[in-house]
Length: 327
Image (cartoon, rainbow, N blue to C red; front, side, top):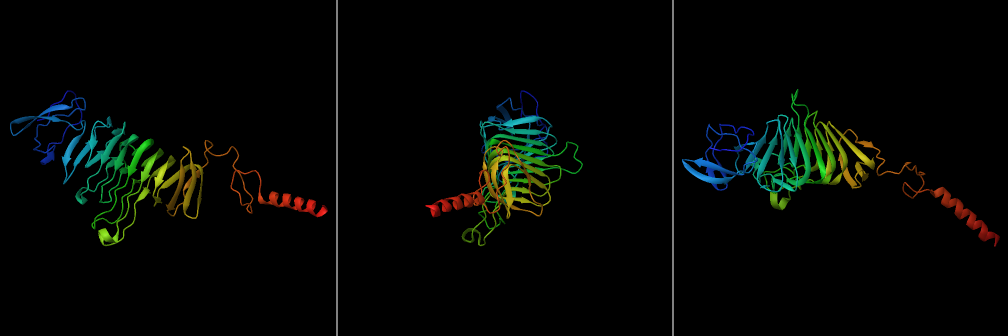
């Protein structure tokens, strides 16, 4: 039996037993709501009352093989911060709810292939990453953050924003059951949107023959199946993959020979491979680009932004030679 000071989201009654803080918790039909304002909570297990620190509230818990699954589905706004480290957790945000990560929150998905979900999955909901670290399924190629929208969703499209204080890792592949490294962020359905204002995003690494018996691929820094991605800033270690969605890049950047490189709107340097039939949408950003974009002579060996070209250099050399001959 849980009790709390204020209301949150009801804990579903049909849970199985789960281990938590070394205790085997047998959920009961008469669970009350759990509140984030009440950390010290009394629990009765088989008529024995123990004192327990509640990890999170306004969320209900369901068991998995080696992890806790936390669900935010009450259409309210919730925050996670550094007061608790969420190791071996799968967090689900749905039904128009909003989850904010602030003050160095840390979330790591479980390392079991049975619990290979994303560290955070946003379905028909909103995610705001301000400051924190997210790690997808360690050693099993799990995804850091997945953004997904249901068809005809009553809550609108899923929306995620990532600020300069965020770091997201795809899980590395380190077991033979794993096919490849995990994506840092993936966007699945039409109507889903992810915006990157800054931060660091690292694709999970593939497996080696010594560990897995075969060589597997790395994950992607950004993986778009459908939906929309807007990149204004950030540091990306891994490819951009776009199947049927759109990826918009803002800054002094160019797309050439399968790569995106240049300077993003936040001043970060970008140099990543881009894979997809549809080219990325490059948007000029005055905050980092020159007031008048340079148009370099095709024969010039100097980069954009210079006020002279090779033809001018050759002209000056001709004048110099004429002077020497006269002398």
